[in-house]
Length: 275
Image 1 (tube, rainbow, N blue to C red):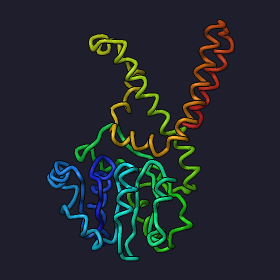
Image 2: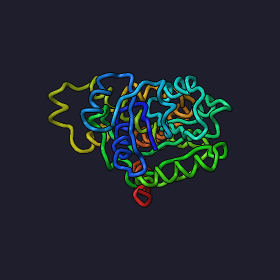
Image 3: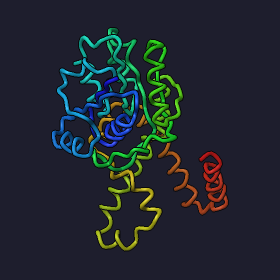
Image 4: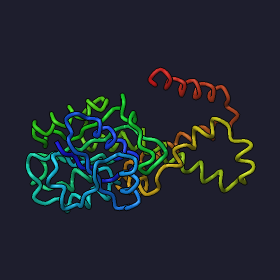
């Protein structure tokens, strides 16, 4: 089989690297709007060849590994794709993508979200083990043919991912709370510290806790702008809930209610029983 990866950043580059080692894939091709990324992907042997968008029809697998807004734009350009070609998108939100898929493509289109990543981006960030033991959420598979479902599940499982299923609406709701909100908090913390502290103090006083909390604030702005835009309502709802939690903490502090605060902290500790 031949596969093309559109978007050669962290996710697309890591995927291409895994496809290069898959015995069932005879050719791995790449496309990226950033021509330097294309050159870098070739240099790093992430792909066999860079191709033009018009040539993707010759591939058996099309992977869309770009920001959500770009995925929606690409969908509009997908014309006359062979019915035997599987199209798999790796966006961070799903409902807006699901709504963009036309009837002609529904049977061969897979909405997938690998719950994996780092704060780094670009082809040089690609990791062969990025997807190992990572959960991959497949959404609204009832619209996809059994052939394309089985092909996708087999391939993603071979890469090392654990498959789970969810509808697009539920995915976006839960992702806003568990995945997107932490990024909002991290970006906010980074901006607050940069506003309040100079570089010297940050270097001297930033310990492990700040490093842990601020790590994902180094993530791609283009990607996260797209995520927040496409999942706006869910992110705002999650943010309202989190602000309520912060206000509860603030109230306990203002009231010197440290007994209640201690119970609040103990309750948060229960998370370690899950993770």
